[in-house]
Length: 144
Image 1: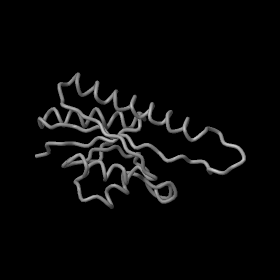
Image 2 (image 1 turned 90 degrees about the vertical axis):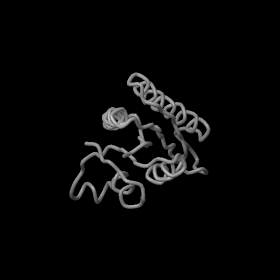
Image 3 (image 1 turned 180 degrees about the vertical axis):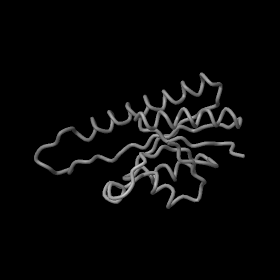
Image 4 (image 1 turned 60 degrees about the vertical axis):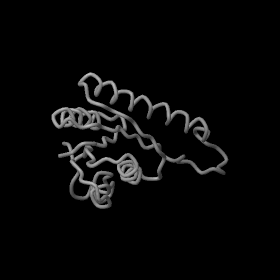
């Protein structure tokens, strides 16, 4: 069935729940996982009179947080004797990074969480999971 599972993580409780489910699936299938973290782009205007955080500091903080999230996935996978690698990239939208990571890393399925929003909140807020489902050619397992 599936041999290489991409598990995106942002460190949230929901993504940790999906991570545990993804590791469980990988173990059952004898599959390898790649943990993925998307670095957001600097959200502040570059030429504003005041910034909350300097771009270099923002990038360092985001990279540090991403590495910590990926470390947690690797540790959980190691505890279950599941092979795990990691991948980080920066994109304006996480769904683009997730799709690209699945392709670059040779994953044959993406397993990710969904907030389970419906109705107006989905239209207003959007969903990275929905965007991945809409734009990728790789199968997606939505873990809830």
